[in-house]
Length: 415
Image 1 (cartoon, rainbow, N blue to C red):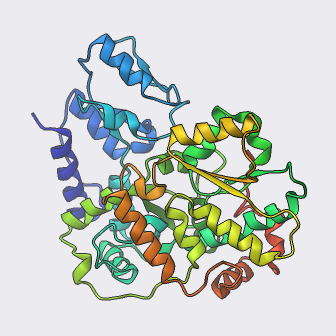
Image 2: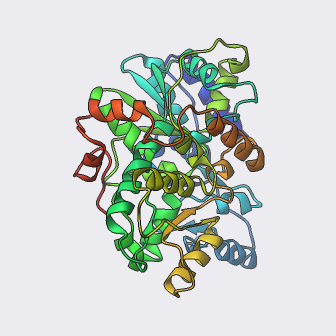
């Protein structure tokens, strides 16, 4: 009997060899046919796939359900665990806790490879700030860019540059909106789990969340604005980003989301070793955008940018951070109970931030060290000092930095 992993590896190899021509012929019946359809058409299936029926006891299923902080997991009518897709945010905890290994995160790898290998469109890789060191300590941004071009991507865009832009936008909003001691702002950048938590559990706090898209969506929209026929593929450590890309008001900005592990699977199948490749040109993000990948990074970025924009502010920015769902809920409960003096709140759904994502390749402590190293290598400390941000904004039609606060389909969303 063919296992899911065997089916997955064969399909990846066949897709590469067929050059996205759609000539793959794999016969499958029963549960294998369901698994095959999930791999071929992931966007027609939920974020978490159930691979067969589980044979866990009712007590074990109750423990699985109790382990979901969003109440998305519950015993199903057929005796197997069921997942409510309207409540699931893609944290991946249920997958890790499934002792029977019957739950699997959605994989976009086959349709993404078809788009890349067919050569019909320009395909851009949008790489999350957490990438540094994920594919080996000697894999520099330039070598990763060369490796992705070997795969067939037209180009690689560092999402950190768009984290710079969103940092600037949130700092401007803070400077404009926080005018008295009782005012506060919750960041809307970066983490879809944090936003989903506020929207679904702490919805009374939504008025304090500025209407901004994530750096992932901003980068995808920018590419599409310049090349409408382009295909955009986000690459990161997060399962929840797959859900974010499908949200009704965001859909279309990012066509596919690959995890770092999926990209490593592509490198392995194509026998690409990024360490051995030559350097390619690199982007020029500031430290602020690069440190988004670790907990506290957004707070530090926005705080330094606010202080740079308006050093004479009467009401200083006071940040508070939490990472992991439990800690985020505790912080928001304290906020509602009036037990905090902070006025800018950052939440990351994963412990450690994005570097602790469920599909990161390396340990989160090492990931944090790498992110900090990459941040320290930046020429500029904040987006205010970064001429690349100003140049990009001018290309996108923003005459001044302050014009970021005007309506923009690129960087704004309505919650």
